[in-house]
Length: 293
Image (cartoon, rainbow, N blue to C red; front, side, top):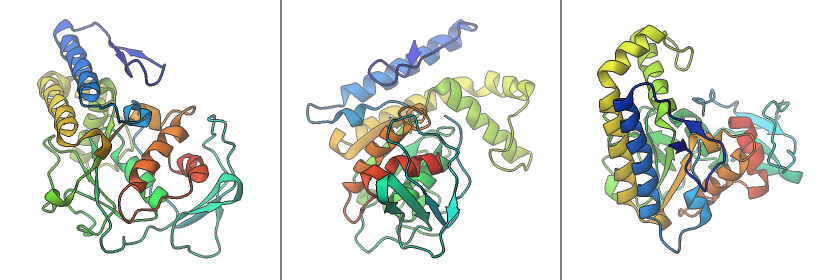
């Protein structure tokens, strides 16, 4: 079994064959996720809705006002751009000439702005995606537990539901669309455990990897449960929305140096289909991606 599936990114990761029972479960999970995506697609869905990619866990919060010069649109976008602070804050992330961008603090959406779910399994880059959405739209984002107190005054709501760490918000019935970020479970589940280890030991988020012996003990107790939860997560989001109201992207694709900017364009276009959301100009999306990711 290879990930991502054929038709997405031609970079593959083979599942090791050390433990047959667990390998079989992982293989079934990867197959089920792939089948679910294609089973629910329609003739009217676009190629971008089948992008399958995703990789590390996220950046720190962005500086409130950063100007970035133009980035060449040749897909091979470097990530070590020189950041030039702006002299004044702008209302939204701003497209500069020749594909440049200015990243500023996001703002409260206007009344009536449609909310989109940002669904991901733990370890699939939720924090990174949060920052990316705010940079693309210039609007607040929130989460299912309302940790930032923004409630429904957001452009997206991050959730891990139906995984046990996620819930549906009390205005769930009003949310008519979602984008879903998936990642190879061979990467996302260990990443999720790293987060658990940091929380247990009162360490900064995304600061270090857990010791191997700690991972092995946790894996032997909980891996089967997490595989089952990952499968339920995939089927829930594929069943809930029709293809025109759902975008599936992968963490591998968002973080890939060759296609990350293009995958981010598909996300920006999808966000822009919601009422009240006007993302940054498409030619500047690779610049935003280069800063955030």
